[in-house]
Length: 328
Image (tube, rainbow, N blue to C red; front, side):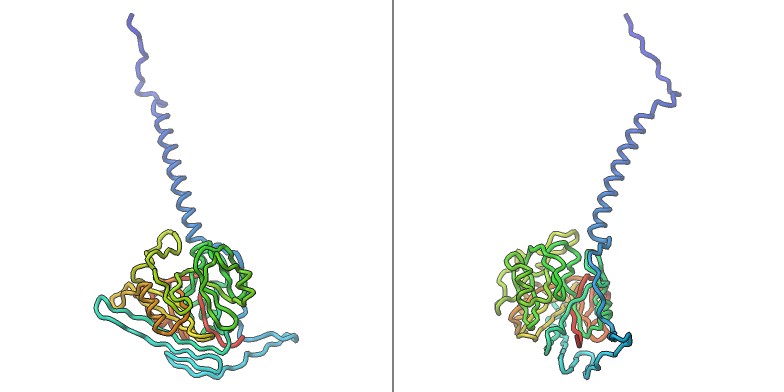
């Protein structure tokens, strides 16, 4: 017996509802998935997250109990584009060029001698601690009346490490080799997992920076930079090849050397870590540490940016700086 099937009604308005609904659901899932990914990336790398607002003590006047104000003591200093000298601080900056053609390197060396370790300080972008809070090195420096400044470790690009700034512990998640500055004018490189923040504070640590690697420790160059890995954040470049660099070294207590290397440009290819370590060794550093580099590498002095960030005199925003300032 022949089976009978109902004839298809091509004019039925509900004929394509289910396929449409299926594709609508698929599209909605894709859009929601992409939106979640985009938001998570923005939340991790773009959206500001302020955890602590730091009191601004960089005023030019000090209030008295009567409500009036007194001007800070005037500093007797001399300076030019490359030098600064006062009773408490001497800064001498040299521009150095080596090699030629595609092998040329341009870098800047600041030799700094202090009578008081308190003159070397750190500052946070927008006076706030957190992630994705950035300002240009020159902006942070100017806001803090800095004489000299370099970019720091860009702590805000990651959420780990031990971060002590001006004697306050802001983050305590030890993971890597770090550097500490102390109130007696010394500098020490160390492994965060082997020295606690409480021990550092007890020893007089004023600031720690968590980036790396260590370049020189106990007077000797760290032998192998081939396997250095700072973190796994999105967008990182290889740290082993020639790059713009920023480094700090100590020659003796209260005698520091800061180096900023231009790179990724025609007149300067940048430096490898081994080359940077050799430069610091040649300058007499007994301890030396690599800070954030690439587009962050910036040296500021007396109201101007000394080097050529990003190869076009254009700074990249950073989360923190090290700087020099007269007085308390």
